[in-house]
Image (cartoon, rainbow over all chains, first blue to last red; front, side, top):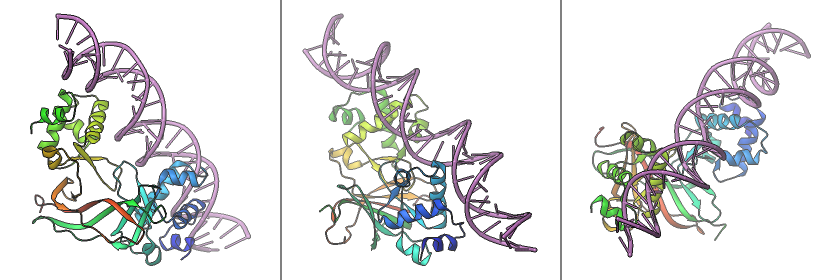
Length: 136
Length: 136
DNA sequence: AAATATTTTGCATCTATGTTGCAGAATATT
DNA sequence: AATATTCTGCAACATAGATGCAAAATATTT
């Protein structure tokens, strides 16, 4: 589906900023931080607009948060979400120690773990660190 | 091992702030954010001191970062680190949706996942969300 | 296509979080 | 007890993110 289509499907107005930012996600298969987006759009938009756009995308399930160990917030697009419109982010995220990219491994499902009794699990997140195919 | 002993073993001076903060971690089996520590020490220490103490503890391997999906940094003590002094945090972290506590499941090891070929893994982190034994 | 209604953007402002340099205080060493 | 080392607190700074509101852009209606 094309970018305007994705926006319309989610009840969002089609604006220059949203189109450009969504395109950035589609071109880049890794995860993006707010700062990456500002760099790549050449400061064409206000900081606040970028924040709000990202928040909107998260709310609509177009994009999801990626867990990190530092204090950065990463956003990643799920291919499945794009196509089908239902939000599921139970896949593994991979962070390359070399190129520092965060990559969604859409095909790798987060495994279940045995929890202590009396613990119930809703959802799980998994981040794997290592060296990606490009850098190897 | 007692708190001053842990500090000494890591080549750190024994100071009021470090003892109190390390005690906080030992008493509380969940993960703590910077803000939690400031609350629990009754603002007895400067903000900067708390930041630096946490950074020092991370550097020395006394405490480790817990991955989160929001922008908060959580710190958690590993029982094993305390006892043996070697850093390993390949256990699962559990975040309770109800009481919002983060709990180190020291006995639950992060499972291995099959990565795409050409990907090498060094270490993995896993966060499970759900309801803990207390809240159930 | 023009007019109106709705959304979105940008600016100004504010808050929280985290860092760094440096002098004084506390701890460790001799 | 005196010296050397380490740590703390203050001030200042940097960055990330949120909010209210008027102006601008988009969507809808006629």
